[in-house]
Image (cartoon, rainbow, N blue to C red; front, side, top):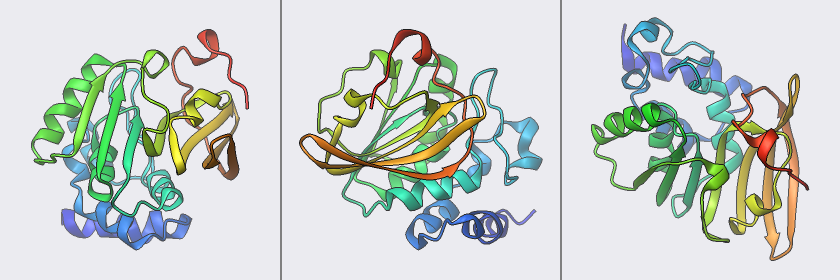
Length: 217
């Protein structure tokens, strides 16, 4: 397999037709070696349009979802980004090429360790990895220009939206069971946010979110 050509084919055949038209983001996807982050038993599916299992709880996002996330955030390079759900570390690496800095957290100890080892091999210096649950994390309000959740929430917590800087953007999948939609939230001012539904999709609900936290708009 010609790996470089296969990466380009993903952009042309999966990402762009589904709305992933951001040229700068597509270049970051092309430049990041996805195959380095995929478990050995799934190497033949490295560029397939599926969520690739990482362990019993973690999955890689599908290429077309990754493209749509990057399109919606439209990162310019100066942003400080929070990623919830490091997973394999692949999308973390892509985000790092498009932003000033990335803080990525994951509650799974094994995934955190695996992602750390994979990312270290790419010599990316603007990534901070944290092993912790987002539900108990302690970030400052207005700390991030962009936030990406790699899992779904039943509703959007106002405290989550407050983590955005003015003008900052949050990508999150909202809903439950078979009724979920990707949402882009933009912070307009100190007390006002704009939410836009982007498309229907499905991601696993954040572990513990339905039981321990009540979310309100």
